[in-house]
Amino acid sequence: MNWIESFLAYLRYEKKYSKHTLSCYKNDLKQLSAFLQQSHQIEDLTLVQYADLRTWVIDLSTSTIAPASINRKITTIKSFYKFLMRAEAIVKNPALRLKAVKAPKPLTEFIEESKILTLLEEVDFEDSLQGWRDKLVLELLYGTGIRLAELITLKNTDLDWANQQIKVSGKRAKTRIIPILHLKATLPAILARYTYFKLQSFPNPDHDFVIVTDEGVMAYPMLIYRTVQKYLTLVTTQLKKSPHVLRHTFATHLLNRGADIRSIKDLLGHSTLSSTQIYTHNSLEHLRDVFEQAHPKA
Image 1 (cartoon, rainbow, N blue to C red):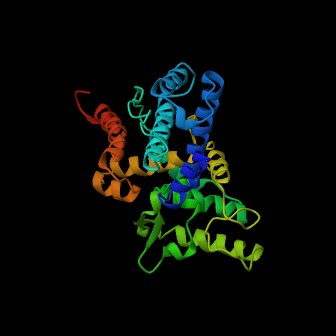
Image 2: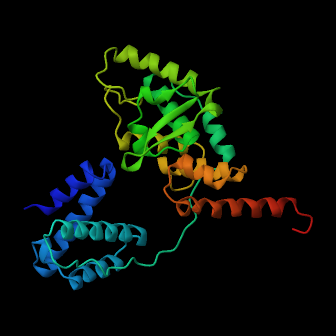
């Protein structure tokens, strides 16, 4: 029996994991399988012992893979062997004693407020399907803090103009409501122009997704990545330019302007407050800058 495929099916249909997460889990398990075959001549993952997994973690730790990535792989393996235990494919969990490797906690990267405003208010976008799509993508990512997967799966029926809000389907099929009142001066006009070009090119779509490719089908992650990287390059020299950076930027700017951290947690769709508290580090840096500039004794 192919336990990897069974595990992925469980995550997809019962846990409702996103395609991106499933892809990461699949790659992690295939990498582990390849390592065990090469280093220990083990082809059946149900025969693995703790020592085998431990050598794999040590091998990863001596490579150039970041600690955070190693810990994600460990999470994958622990979840996989829990699944095998429940399926009674094994009688002892070899991953039970695996521990996460120590990793530094870097500050989350974000774009300065002035640079984001320059991008959204002063940069010229092409008057075409592609140009208005690009502007809409940036406006939604920064204006709502939604995740990449949430943006791609956003549908026209999720946009509630009457109540000035959008419905987002987040991780594990959890839905949340995000107000868009603050975007009323820009978003409707952008969306209207984008929709005009979209209907001109694809008058009879067979889906309801907001963001589409040049061929009129549902957008894919790399398209959004390329879009974000293209435009962030115009306003910043920082190395990391991804959709998630705009999510970090959304949260950091809210916190810097006095928003309650619990409200930010709900807007981001975090299940625990600890996930949101990473942004307080950025806010402290902001406060230090304010102090240095404003306090008489600074």
